Length: 336
Image (cartoon, rainbow, N blue to C red; front, top):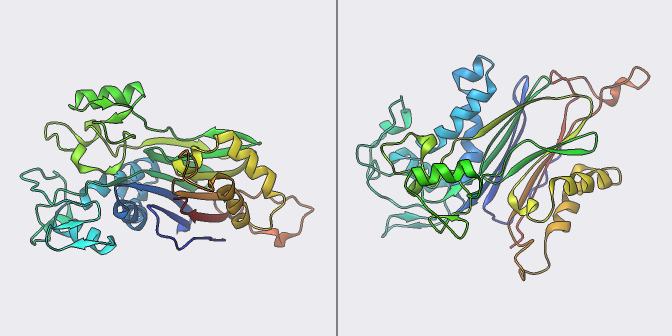
């Protein structure tokens, strides 16, 4: 596994675990807006919530990751949520009670019905309603020959199958009819392509100011953490998997990125170098025009082909995932 990470502080974070357990790999990209703490929180905690789920133990990865997305919102409330977000935040204003992207406000009697071990901690911020900043979440789990993709927001997961790009997630934008209908029914509005004139994506973790309707379940709020789940069976034609934030997709289409990676993966000695080429291609020399000046993060997972009988066994051992042990590279860079 090769990992390349830039030390420049950005709002985009990632997870890349070849062995979430003995037979499952976990990859995720989290693109923060209004602050970075929710993205950092998701990168730290989401995979552990998937792992501890009863559905995960029963082999239902889709249900496990679906529940984990909503669990992030639950965990970021109350005293424990405040404390964890404070530890991840860069700035604490002791006088106004604010952290980067966080606002303390009474939660009232609005509490989740299920068991929430985080809610038992008492303190001056027991009524913390959660962060006003938020984050996309695009996650992929691989077990045996099955790939499970969960997405909320406008980060995207794309697979290259025999050189053809296939989107495994959908960008959640206000112009989508189903999203627009939910927003309006929940009491929100869309102005200039943005929810209530401010947010340009319709699903996210965090963004609690858009999740205050006590008469609606979490999946029907103005903004929801409810992820789309896509289950795909992997095959020998699969080349690689890409998870990336919108800073990449604003510069290249899915097929353009797949073509670009195919071109450079033959030339470069590592996936790190391939990811660097992608970021070089997307990063603009200046912020004039807007394109290319966003934060950029991508996770590139290459599926090695099955070993043929006439090849040496030291090419790589066959893994339990139905493909050889994937080589993973993460590249992160700030384009602003």
